[in-house]
Each structure stands twice: as C-alpha cells, then as structure tokens.
View (cartoon, rainbow, N blue to C red):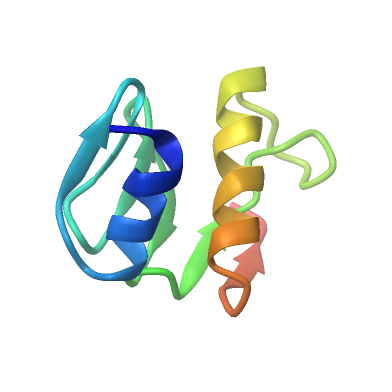
Length: 77
C-alpha cells in the first residue's frame, strides 16, 4: 500500500500499513514513532522546522500527512 493510501486510511479511521508508515485507524506511525492521532485530527511536527527532527523519511511522512489532512492541528511534539 502506498504512503498516501495509508494516510487516507488514517483520516478515514481504517487500519493500513505500507512500508514504514502504518495506522491502526486512530494513530499514525512513522516506523514506531507516533506522528498523528485522532484519525486526522492532530499531527506531531517531527521535522527540522517543527523543532523535533527524527529522520528524513519521518519528515516526508509528516509532510504528506499535512497535505492529506489539511484540517489537522499541527503541534510540536
């Protein structure tokens, strides 16, 4: 499953897994790091600009989540 589809599943409250991105329908994980909660409600900004850089891949996952869940609250972890 593509990362885009995993995030769409998260926003829809459905389980999905693809590579290093996964969701149980409520929480979104990049590897084992929690990057989102509430089925698209809140995204934790684990990017260099967000002040909590984890990895380049996680930054890409966070950026994609921000684009696909435009109404999410973006918070510092």
